[in-house]
Amino acid sequence: MNLIESVKTCFKKYGVIEGRASRSEYWFFILFYALVSIPLELFAYENLNIAIIELIVTIGFLIPTITVATRRLHDVNRSGWWQLISFTIIGIIPLLYWLCKNSDEENNRFGSNPLK
Image (cartoon, rainbow, N blue to C red; front, side, top):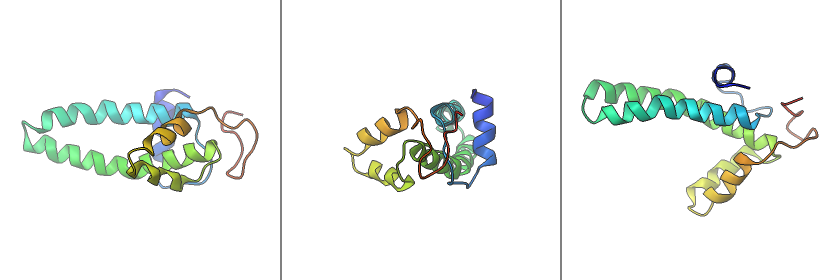
């Protein structure tokens, strides 16, 4: 999956938490979000209009980011609720590990392998 396909897929599945998401789908979407939000954040300090646009973009990306992370965790046979572990400082380490981990090769309780 490339960057454009990933962004299209994540916005098509805006509120969908069922199923699984491959590593490339998740990380390309996060890359796209970073490429959009970082420049906006840098210029937001100089211009109120850009700050408002940055706020709207952040709010617009909130739900797709949560849902694609949930589907990514489903891909490694974890519940999406494991995202809440990031509120503890030490919890970021296992969460990043699961987000970077290879997909389960076989079908799991969340569906079939997205790469097959």
